[in-house]
Length: 59
Image 1 (spheres, rainbow, N blue to C red):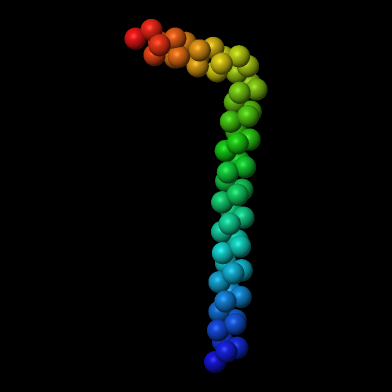
Image 2: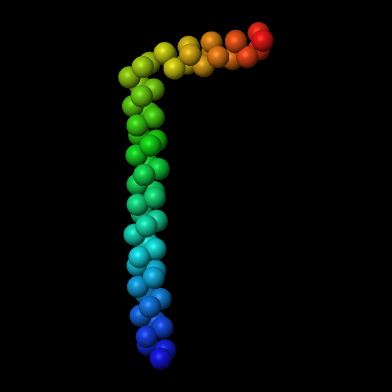
């Protein structure tokens, strides 16, 4: 009985490890895409944020 429980636990941890790696991969992918977007647009994003802040403060 104990061996079966140990195998189930190993299988669960192996499965969980794979899903954690997939989640980290997605997070890293989103960060990379955001960095590329900021790099490609240059100061465009900064200017957009500054305009939005000015609109909010001015309102």
